[in-house]
Length: 459
Figure 1 (cartoon, rainbow, N blue to C red):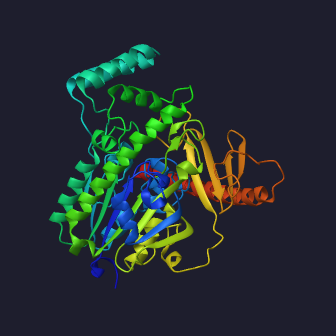
Figure 2 (figure 1 turned 45 degrees about the horizontal axis):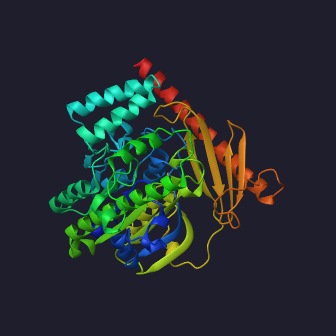
Figure 3 (figure 1 turned 120 degrees about the vertical axis):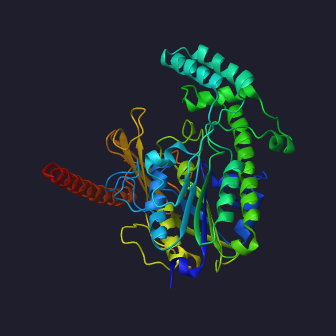
């Protein structure tokens, strides 16, 4: 017996840009995450969890379809040829609901697939704000940065002090809770929070509670400049302040998650598997930027991951390396559903009780876009291959090869490529085999598309 017949629910909580080293349960000094810390005590915390991609599109492709971003028909928008977790669970009798406020996770990118109820709302700017935004865009187009900054200052001081395009975490939690309250059938509920994402809206009450400087509207203009990838390096002083504001948003998300869990009630939670994880991390100047651009370093790939629910050992800490590619197969396993053949990941339930760790190599993939387009067809494709101690990063188009000794250089600062390390050859062989396989998959996909096109022409 499996699927909805088990009577178990699944709550999948994903948090944009959340680094594990900014959570209390991972040893952080600031009180950012009391709710998540408690959740970790009631379940399992994974210390070596990684995402396949360093930004939202490749990461969620792997999370929901358990496939690599560059396999088959790509990853953005989510192709119809890749079957998603919500589709599987809906087919097993689950009531499926997805709520998020990320532009890359909406209907236009096909993330509504398999959801009975799907919400992708955004904060709508008023008329005056839209007019200012139009002037800012024109100024940026004409490279009038001084004018652009002045218009931003006017906007945040006199028109709207909230630069976020997404809805805040408390709003998302309320929407999610209303769906739980209206639902009687076993459910799969996915909730995604955006508040740890640029432009880092300062949470004034939390900052003051910590004895830190409160909201400064001028800082929001500076955050906007960081989004635009300014050329000058970010100073240490700026990084300290950015982290303060970032941390205040983590605490705000944590409060909102607590509201959701408390609102669900103990009876429902007792029958619910709760997965909490990030889609990717965030860079704070480790490799020259603030944010999450097309790079495959660990500040972007290492993520927090917590699993709690019926039968999950309490207070367990799992050090095995796991990938977000494994999340959908794990949920399928928890619900005793037949494995999905097309899923490339593996259930991590065995990792909870197995002492020995397999010699698995985790793969990362991303496209560093060469133009401001939202597709997976333009730009340099970059891969990473890592085991516990070594990582290879390969950008074939730009002819860039990087090799890092993670045991002695966890910050990935000393490139050892070309120095004769044995691991370079071993990881390169894995890279070549993986890429050749993906090229074969893409070729087969193109053949299928051509056959379909010819059939349509005949009709």
